[in-house]
Length: 168
Length: 442
Image (cartoon, rainbow over all chains, first blue to last red; front, side):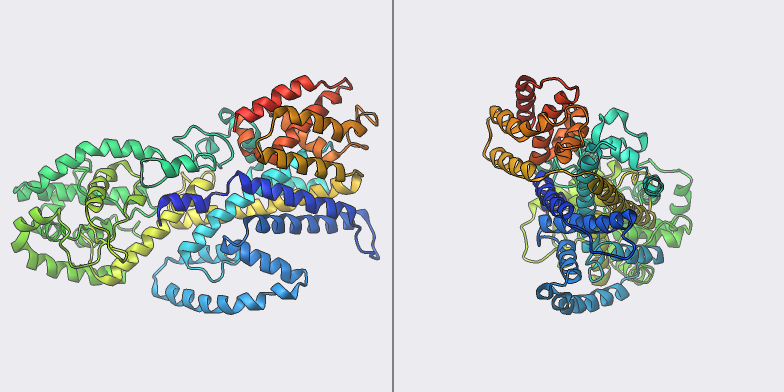
């Protein structure tokens, strides 16, 4: 893999920011217009938390959609989100078969390799953090992490800029 | 309650520094972050592996890591490569043994200082750069063995210090603690090496001559250039790169065993894997702030994990904040979205700066009359808010680089709003000027 390709695959570009911003703003509009389901508590804090949850999901889903299927983590995240939203067409069972096979292969490779314990535990933690990281070999896991970190940074930047615009 | 959660969320990762980094010039960064480019701003090219400079990096002459200090190190190493060539023809064993010992200890020093996958630690270049204390120990007869090994394996171009670690482990048990490589393959490879060394000492002279040629039947890897990030390793790498460039490309991935290393297929594969991992770790190191100071794969991983967790926490915190803002504000996003869409299309099609003011004026015309001072009643808070935050930092070039087209439009809208904030009539003139500025920059 040439380094040019590495950097290209690793770096989300400005277009990603643009796409993410657009999608995120659209979702925000929808969320703002929506009303929380009636609940016994009906407190404003609960409503805020509910909204926050939806906004967080919206942020992650819009980021995953902006990235598309180019990245393993985006695919995994998309599948997971669709599953949580109840869309059975994209339910995770379809992908989990492939993932199981890859997971087995990855585990075998892991056993063969004599990784340090620290590194193993660190990788394990990383697998839990990065969506879809359970079945990846360390190298691609690190690559996915790099891209994921960049996308997260983009997300944080856009959200922060939106939030800071609002007068408190 | 919410404020407390917000504060708690902020503290863990010095998110203020990150925040500042978005909007302030680089000079005002937290010193721990100053050498990091998040891909946020337009760094001067030598530093960044950022988004903006990634095309430049891919087009750059350095065939390896985007960090441009490598380029300088490449040039620095050029004169050393000639000395390497001369050295290879030198029949003085003692001299070579001395140099080898220097190289050996040097490689260990290099490895101890650069834990992150020094797969390509070169051993030849740093002559006389090591602690002389190590030389006497190595100058005994065993020193010839690794020398012979190096000569023999010159064909295979053994370069990695991992195998040399095996050699040196027999000589010095000290500085291998930083070696995180495999223990078992190393021992096996050491036996292999010793056998090969004894057999090959006869063909030393010939090997020295043939070192440059790729006559090894083993598969040899060609891609070592990616790991060049240490000045002391670069001259060796330059030589390798030249050799690799001269060789014809093969069908399968060639793994070239480096000097002093096992040529066992397993260890070769291990080395390849390790190098790839270290390559990725280096990329991550650029992304995560403050990772340059951390040395060691495990610590780096911890830093990365912390960073990812902090980013996720920030997203959560920001979403909570947005939610609170959403509920407290009633605004109409439709006009904003429609106007933004128009502006997006216009941006994509290479817009005329003069297009913006009319759009903005139409978008905000209805909001002017409602409230000029307080912004959050009936004007569009999203655009307002974004604009207000953005236009304060608008002159900052780096901000603009990560703005993207959409935020750019928000910024332009914000200027309209900003001028209204003082309850004065906004003029299209400054907006046009700023729009043209925006157009110039990207």
